[in-house]
Amino acid sequence: MSAPAGPGLDPGDVAAFGPAGAAPRRGGLPRPPVVLLALGVLVVATSLLPLGFVLWSTAQMGPAEAWDLLTRPRFADLLWNTTRLLVGGVALSAVLGVGFAWLVARTDLRLSGLWHGVLCAPLAVPAFVNGYAWVSTTHAVQSSYWGAVLIVSLSYYPLVYLPTVAALGRLDASVEDVAASLGAGPGTSFVRVVLPAISPAVLGGALLVGLHLLGEYGALQLLNYPTLTTGILDQYRVSFNGPAATLLALVLVVFCLALLGLEALARGNRRRARVGAGVGRPAARHRLGRAAPVWTLVVAGFAVLTLGIPLSSLLRWLLHGSSSSLSSGGLGSAVGTTLGLAVVGGLLTTLAALPVAWLAVRYRSTLATLLERGVYPANALPGIVVALALVTVSINVVPALYQTLPLLVLGYAILFLPRAAVGVRSTLELAPPVLDDVATTLGCTRAGAARRVTLPLVLPGLGASVALVSLAVATELTATLLLAPTGTSTLATQFWSRASAVEYGAAAPYALALIVLSVPATWLLGRVAVVHQQSNEQGNEQGNEQGRPA
Image 1 (cartoon, one colour):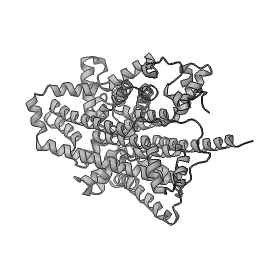
Image 2 (cartoon, one colour):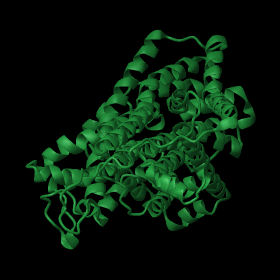
Image 3 (tube, rainbow, N blue to C red):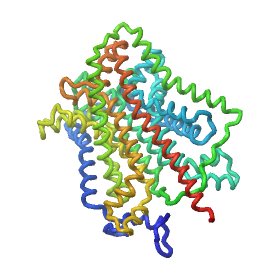
Image 4 (cartoon, one colour):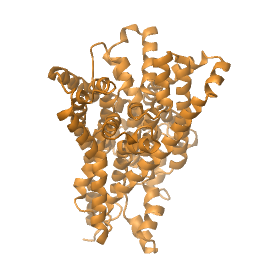
């Protein structure tokens, strides 16, 4: 259905004016509600606290001292390692994510539902657990660029795969039909038609991968691959030089800003929401023909790399490790704490991302874009830098918050707000604003239209955002080590204390428990992608029935 936009005005034009009843701004754009704007500013200001701490701490260094640090050969090595890991890791993750998403969603690959679950499953294996499994299996991956790229890509490619599967499920198949009618083959159609249409999902996932690589510590430390992040931890641990460490963190922020600029440039300002069922049938699946068994073996072999090696390594150490003695009470306490923090952190972070994403999608402006981009710099900072910022602020401003669970949850929200923002924004972009306009013309208030029209459309995406953030919270390491109250331990911290002491047998139970605990959230993320595809097919069938003459 479409709104009665009047002569010469189509639904896309109506959508450009935002929700009906919104106060107009210069240029005909809607003015955001004051409460929504205030919430967005509060969220962004809180997320920028660590960046303020980095700038303040770095300013305590003299220009000569800063220049001396930035011109050292060690800094050049860290910068080079970080840059090439970022390029290689993001590129390989994007290729793997898009390639396997296409194979599962758009070909007649046998048992595609099963393979979809298998391809989502690596989200349940934290990167530092993956690194531990590979290092304890073979030392060939240590001190190796290609080993580091391989392991981080195997850990983070689902961040590209999941949104790409969902986008392919919602893509109007008519665009491919038009390309085929003009003589384009499957490859040409994918590159020139499909890939630009799903580019927001691919770019959002690639951005998340890049941000995670900038802040990754555990896996790279185990792999003995030094980057700016491991250098920051070395500065704190060896020399206790806070200003020098925060100067390195400031370089990471520059990397983050560069990633944001590239993603924004590639994304553009094109609106992608549509009203109506579109084509009256699901997209046709491409036939693999004689190559079907080969591609099945490719997916199976990839599953061995992503799941087989980590799980077999953990089981081997659990059964045969000489240090595998474990207190069941300690494991149970760590499981309960991890689960509670993951749920609370996921819900709080997704709620915090909602006003920021709403402003960026429904009230597009320079201010809204700046607010949305303002949540990303903290994600490029290592968890220890965010934690030190919160410790400094809490001790000097709100001493009662120091060494409390609320401060730890706030740290999680700041660290993982970009995960939630990407998920919530991509969901809102697929909910046409014109539907809110129709609801308001029928007597609904703007709040009522958002609750009755928009919320049901974005609820699956919000659930996926909660699951994605909960996974990150459950596996967070460095900030938890510093912010957790005395006596509070999680599966990640218990695992790390044993793995870093080379007690692989004692670390294995905590790693396995962490994987098992992450399975429900991983299943939910995979299920949301499937539901997106099924709902699109059902909508197409309904549109086909409504479009037929009686």
